[in-house]
Image (cartoon, rainbow, N blue to C red; front, side, top):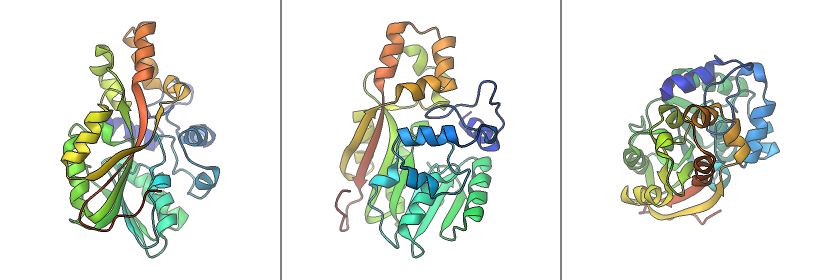
Length: 283
């Protein structure tokens, strides 16, 4: 369901006049809707105007829940791995920071997203960005081959989050950094939401509690695990998301249940270090 949903977003197979496929923050933005809505959503979750103007047109679909690149302290010449790279937004921003001597690898399981990302890279003239088909639970990269792992509102979609973090740990060089922006929970979701497949695709019901999320990263071997920033998920983003609308309408949530849902969903930026090398200071 996740692959099909995001494949439809990448292909633009959703109507501007009717319900769209789900996104993690706000409605999906097919090509017929233009880039304005996606840029508005992205600006609310941490992207600057300069960043959004620096990437190829079509690389931003308004699907994230934060800006992990802004906090990753990327340096010239580093190799960056993006888990669930979508149309390439964070990959292109990372490529701008690591320069021609650096390298960025995006991994996504959705062929339609990869096609779109590769076309964006060609149009943008990016020679230091590569997109690979794969699942984040089985990363198509060598051991200890990257300096930084980033991800933006994707790990919550995985049915095996501990394995995702073990794979990220494997891929990182000693001293490498993990910087993810993801949905975490503060409190319990209503049972109807937790059991909803649509809410899972929409980045809600697959999310973990904050402390469970942090402990899962630690159990993978990471150290210095901490929440760098955290905010309540923007109310207008959630209520504009057609998946969230379906959850509210189809599941018949009461007003108290809706209030609890909105209060429970948080956007968190989390960093961690793979031990064994000289870590860089925090941003």
